[in-house]
Length: 303
Ligand code: COA
Image (tube, rainbow, N blue to C red; front, side, top):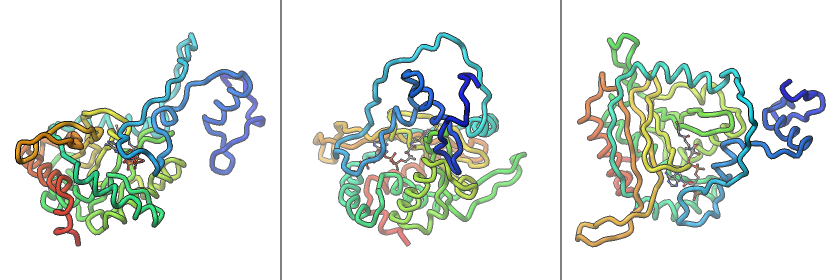
């Protein structure tokens, strides 16, 4: 309506031929030759490519000419954005406790390089996330209060049996948090397979309600876009969430006091301070970190 477009002239690329925002933007672009603002996804996240250089860490933002429209614009908040308003307003009622540390992923980076082609030969892209999720699940087995929920009046705690670990996902539609179900009984490869499925559906805007509900703990890997530090907000009724920064090559000392090139990542945990104390968060974080810094430790505890 804003641009006097007849919808009958626009070809829809959505489900059952539905017309999406991108279709309108493409149509306008063709009509006017104007360069329209790219979607944030297209701008920041090139499609994943298994052939990326080994030392690549952060995608470089594509520079595009800025667009100045010259007039204010008001639009309704809807869809995933509306859901975000509701969840984050509820999250504001939770007293957040923050705890940060750095993790040396040098060994994990090497291990993933070895395993990546094996997973790829089975048709699966293996990122770092499956390891982060598995290590978190092994930690949650020892600290079940972090995989719990509290009722509204904070009178009862329910310790969840399943580790349904949510992954904050950046999509064309906005932020969504699908979860990998029962991580406690999944292998790293099974988690990767499930993550590939969720990412594919998330990109297509086709995640099911089952995929998007029932999460018990969340990880937000903002580092895949960029940034060294982040402070995550708890997703109620969950009680803890972790935000991960970018993996960067930095100098560190080994046990002999020699400097080496380490692959470092910062983690920042946020927990519900009504039921979780700092010592618990710290012990969980130490355990999670030890699994990732020494990936072979995970073998001992894998079922
Ligand atoms: N540091 C450096 N590189 C990283 C990284 C990190 N923290 N995390 C991932 N990467 C790399 C991956 O290993 C991969 O490289 P590769 O091609 O060599 O394998 C590349 O970045 C792309 O990874 P991606 O496809 O994004 O997979 P993923 O499993 O690592 O992450 C999601 C999946 C869903 C978490 C991610 O795509 C995403 O949406 N992140 C944003 C989350 C967000 O918006 N959080 C904020 C919520 S408020």
